[in-house]
Image (cartoon, one colour):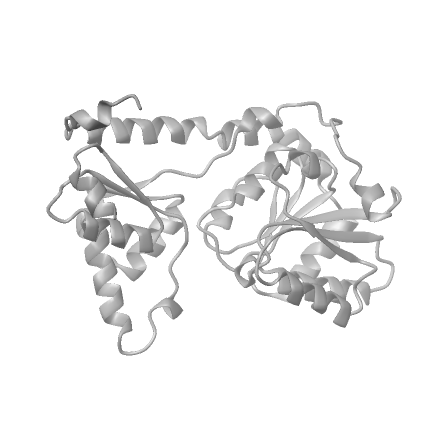
Length: 319
């Protein structure tokens, strides 16, 4: 289907998202020559290339990516990860670009007291518990099981400040995670709520955002939380560590329940609320997506301008 569309000559640029889409796009574009930009949003892992077919799969994907005119990653960590798995792409260094993820920062430049929802009332909580938030897909790579184990460990400790964890998200593992909450006896400490498209009102009601990911290409929710002036406790996994570096946010080793427990305990005992609020303006400037928009627009225009194609007469029909 893509090949047929490209051969119509109506398109000046092909933009694929994800390594599978990039491979399909490269095959569809063979002999057609439409400028191709491939954006990769997920880091690669060794487990993706198992068995005796693994090297062949790796070689095929590297060859397909090598056909793209530009290969974009959303963080320097993600680019390093790409070259670790596909070192042959190093010969195309001029085509490898990092265009970081970003957020609509202006939406967060509002007074810190701005709240449009009463989350505590929805959860049946008073003002006493520290409200900890998890926002992301309920999938293993997001580290929610590690977070649940850390919460269970916390509940066994004495002289602990009251806290409550609320998770917002969607994903295939929500039922399993809800069962795990019941199995661990954590229903008085944890609630799972549906995914919210606009996290800004939620973030401003949280005292702490926890991002326990096992791997990331980048982390939008961390950017959003910092732009909202909310303290962030995250793991040091690739991608996420790049976002949290040189900020007031704190990091703990990834996939380490004991370390996350200690990090949570420290956050509850000595929160860095004011430091997070003071950093919000800088976070808004640092993570504003306008910077990446400009770079991406310039790249599109540069590639497309060299391959303008005439539009077939039937495509001009206003009907």
